[in-house]
Amino acid sequence: MATFKKFEDITAWQKARELTRLVYEITKNGNFSKDFGLRDQIRRAAVSIMSNIAEGFDRGGRKEFIQYLSIAKGSVGEVKSQLYAALDQKYITGDVFNKVYLLAEEINRLIFSLMKYLGNTDIKGLKYKATQ
Image (tube, rainbow, N blue to C red; front, side, top):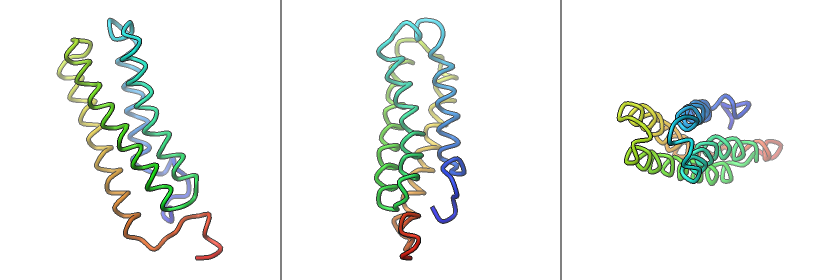
């Protein structure tokens, strides 16, 4: 928050955007595109990661940001679980699974690190800037 001027500067958000692009790419063709439930759910979960990072940041408070990062982290887990379903149904190959899963794992670590940093800082957030 003090080091970021906008949510687009956050590496976890940038990687979540990349993950969302990949999820849309792998779900737009073949049998995956016809499994409307799984296709829509994994897309929503991927979009949820980047959306919650952005929303939490733009709320301007450290505690709110941590809360929204926690929600984003949960959505990472959801994407990872849904990747297993896609793999089991043979909608994606093992190589595709590994590529997307590893990116999700990276995002998970980035979010966790950011949450840990925010939990250990005295910075309250932009909405408290005048009182800090």
